[in-house]
Image 1 (cartoon, rainbow, N blue to C red):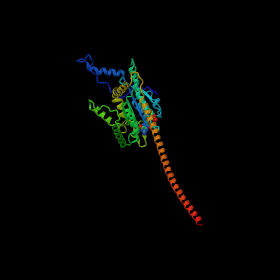
Image 2: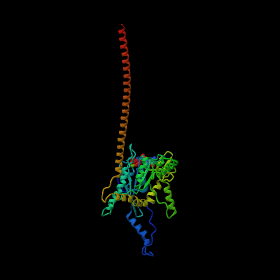
Image 3: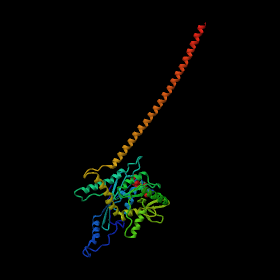
Image 4: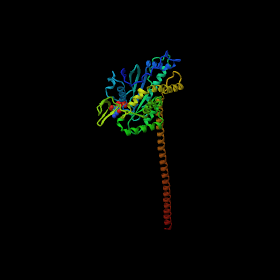
Length: 404
Ligand SMILES: Nc1nc2c(ncn2[C@@H]2O[C@H](COP(=O)(O)OP(=O)(O)OP(=O)(O)O)[C@@H](O)[C@H]2O)c(=O)[nH]1
Ligand SMILES: [Mg+2]
């Protein structure tokens, strides 16, 4: 489903305002290279930007609800939101791409959000990450192929700039499946871990859960997105520090307007004891996450994707295959390799158990042979005894008849 949402009246949600205008080249003393930022601003403002966010994680953790919340809270007075956001989210069964065009102060951003089906519904979920990882690789591959064409104008760019991984709010720690998926995602995209349904954990449990997750991320060497902290002004440095300290971001998703105890109309989830508010920093980190994505670090996410993740992909592909050659499917290979491995294991296990059965049977046979041998021996002895008895009886009878 593709909705195009255009919003001209956005508040300050997007992109920082233009830099203070530098003097024009004609009024500049010197060569005029100080005018470069101005020229750059004009180019960026004219071209706009493409920004793609992806959400993934287990089934039912609230990915679709989050996407809808992000849209309804980011885009004011949307013209065309009824289609997607009015109905309650149902189970996502295929990758859904939603596009919106955001515009503020003549600056345009083409925002794409990719909602993925949740995994974890099957008894064996080991390979449920493959379609997601394949999708990310495919976007890099498509872009690389377009770059190799003689004409590169109008190239479609759907490379994922930020991948939000939703963690189930268990209160314990990351599951082995989380670790496996996060490892694979972290090496391909800017991975941002998110704790889903923060309203289901108490503040103390949430903090402990965050700490456990941070420890596992460090211990398992999972690559997650970290924004540059230090900046020229102190306020920005402090803001960056606060954002990073909140990682993994705990979010609450809801598109419903509810009335709080003190009479405010907010987006949130209503409970008998009160309201869990989406945009309240004391309740969750939704605002911090939205700010990171849309307001403060969009450009950093785009450039790190270009310079690190896409570059890595391009380099690996160029080193391992010839120009124009089709890409091998390493993820599929991984699946086949594991299938082969499990088949081999099953085969050896079966051979081992047959061998054991055979050995036991052999042992039983040997025991039986020994038993029969012994019986034969004792029977032989018995025969001998009987023969002796018979002989002595015979001699006795003969002696008797001779005497007569
Ligand atoms: N308590 C609470 N419930 C939530 C939150 N976000 C979503 N839900 C509920 O969780 C249920 C599943 O939400 P979805 O958004 O469909 O979950 P999903 O991750 O997209 O699920 P799949 O599409 O199956 O992968 C819905 O009933 C939502 O109302 C939240 O922040 N807190
Ligand atoms: Mg969904």
